[in-house]
Image (cartoon, rainbow, N blue to C red; front, side, top):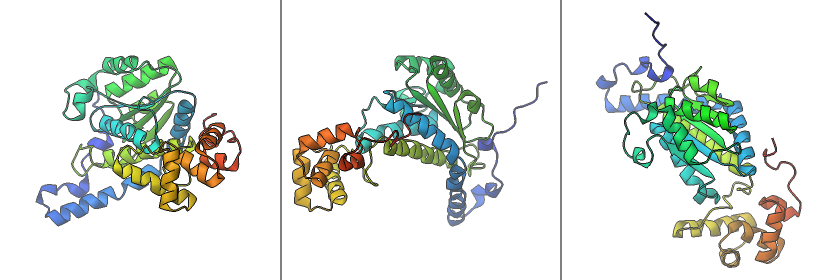
Length: 311
């Protein structure tokens, strides 16, 4: 008889919650909150690996490639969520950062049985995207052994794409299938095996870090302002004006006039105001500075790298 597989961290019982069903609501919520409090520290322990992942993402995007998140269930949904938030936040092309979920769009809202067990499906999904060596694939699997994610990472490596794995188990199987392995040890879940809890929270934190840090390094941010925001609704139109005001210390009317002249592009409006030039000249400065507002204002070309993209 073969030895059984060791129980992974995400499947172990949490000794602090063995009486979960007998707890009062306040005790239960306090216990859950106490468990959640350790997630940020677990993520912090992997910052060196997360930084390496950011470098791969910056290099891929700078070189005309794409960031592709691939996962199943909660892990895959979190990838789709992060990808979908990049265009309005950072002005990225929707085709530049993509979330691929086992089972497709339907699986975003309901479980698609056995989709996560198919490595062939993962390959088909990446082939459909035309994956090539310029891209980076981030495989997300709380368990660290999801066949769909393993299949995707293996195919990505075969075509020469960069690969990152994100798991919530130490010694995870997917770690051996990626160039950079991120392993978050959150300890056992409050509800045994429910990886939408601490595991999901830690994955969301890591994806936030990867995409936000990469966008900063690619010039999508000036100071701590979202200067490439797309003002596609009333809230974002107001935010764009406030961003221009904050960056230039101008009044609201000046910000709105500059935005109108710049086609509602906050970056252009900021450079226009701070340099005392029109929108066309501001666009030219930004083009020379490869989109970096600070370099455009200083009138310098970005150093190799204002981002880490030349790794």
